Structures are given as structure tokens and as C-alpha cells.
Length: 223
Image (cartoon, rainbow, N blue to C red; front, side, top):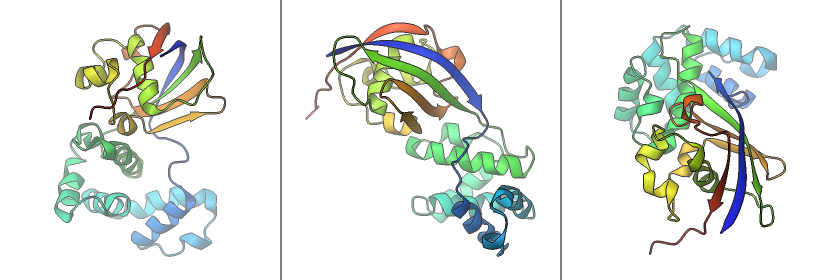
């Protein structure tokens, strides 16, 4: 058992996560949208070229192509077809039952949202900036599961994670879904962290307290 002092410094609400799509992604997608000259184009112009190439297609057709590229190994043809149509009406990235795919669906959605100037719903992500300082032990690198359990005390009762995973977030039992809820977790010093997730999972209104103490217990294996 370890005690931590938690300080939630800020939550940024963003439309896209910079750096998610690589130059290789842009070039590969340009080829799929019948623009074969991506490799010789200026790297800085690739996102704009892709937006132009995408907008030549019908929105649901473009969605199918990008979904195939990112999730073709996990989704069937029928699922891709269904999601590509649903994406035009709903924020599928917030509602899709397989939560380990929600992060990828967010990035796909926002790429299409930009290319079509708003024909797709605008989903948002949260970047939570916080520090977690042990008050009675050595500093250690925390996992997504550790971080969510420690944040629990500062989250409002309305928070979606608390409502759906009340036992997992509040008790010393495994919380495997944490890895899917937290899309990215970065730290340079194992004290100051940046956590990326859907605004649906954590948003500014979810924070009850910005400074509090929390206890991290050893998770018991449920055999």
C-alpha cells in the first residue's frame, strides 16, 4: 500500500491528438485514395493532400477505406460497413461496445471530420495533466490501472468510468479495461503525467477536487 499526493493541474479539450498519424500513414492512405504521389510530396503537405483526396469520395465510402486501413484486422466487412454509416450520425468512438477500439475510432472520426468540414460529428479528447507524488515510498512508474485508481477520489460521482466500473476503480481488484480507457500515458519523471482519453471518459466537469491524497493498494489476483 502506498500513499500519493495528487494534483490535477489542467485538462485540455482537443479535436485531435497531434502526432497520431505518421507520414507513413498519410502516404499509405493517399495510395488507398488513388493519389500515388504521396512519397514524393513535401512531408508538411501530406495531411492537406490527404484531406483533398478523401473529399473526392462519398463520406461513408471514405470511412470504409480508413476503417479498413486502421481496423481491417479486427473488424469484418459487415462491421466496417455498419460503422461507416453510423459514423455520419453518431459519435461511434464514444459508443462502440469494444472499448479497446474507441481510441482508434476517435482518430478515424476526426480525420474524416476535418476532410469533410463537419459532415461527421465532432468528437473530442481530453489531455489530463497531473502529478502523483508518493508520500511514503519510492517513486515508481504507474500503469493506466494505477493512475485511474488513484484519480478515483478526485472524480465526481457522475463520471462515466465510476458509473460503469465502480468496483474496479475503487477496490483492489484487477481493472483490465483501464488500458483501453487510457489511450496514452506519458511521463518523463514518473511524477508528472499526461493522460489522453475520450472527453466522454474524463472531462473538466468530472473533476471534484484538484488536490487530494489517495492510496494505491496491491491488486489482488482474482483466481
